[in-house]
Length: 248
Image 1 (cartoon, one colour):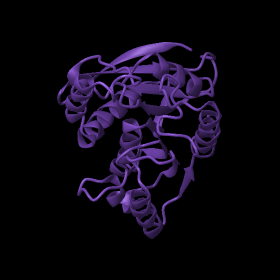
Image 2 (cartoon, one colour):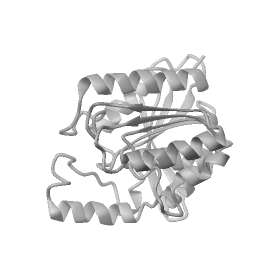
Image 3 (cartoon, helix red, strand yellow):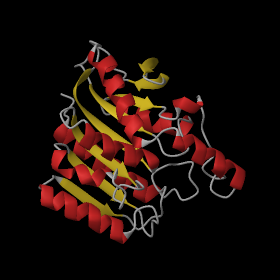
């Protein structure tokens, strides 16, 4: 799949974004899916996953939302067990708060809207782990632009914090899919109850599916990767996008 690097100017610098597009450039103008990576950041496995979405007819904008710290990524097999690496990751994530990523995404949407080779009036968003939090947050913060949002083993998507994205459930217009890992301390049963109660009260369109796999199940370089669960998530997320953001 062709990949074009975009330099998106934001209030805090220049964010690097990698636009994966379908091979058949002579076809219809592809709709945009914005892809937020997990806490490991942009790395080969994330490009592989973006390319899979692009193969289904989407223009996929893979976002380095860690750009304030540079073009940086982490080995997810080591970062949680190495105290120094973990501390470095926490510092990097601290510079990429969800509210800032919303601002960055708004800037990205302006850049995409100015392009004639993609369709960005309505977009899909998908994210994994930390990126799942970003996808859900953006859906509530920029509701007029997000048609579908998927959060896969997302963490912190419903908490007691005043900035928790579930508190903007009334603003949502997107159809939502949550793929929740088993025994995930970043998305506990109590947090899931907060989430579903808010979404039900708002009348949001959503599906929350429990996976028997561990956190990180969808990402192939994660030690907890589960091939069957990963395949299930591909089926569910691509079905969501096909319904809400058709490529034809």
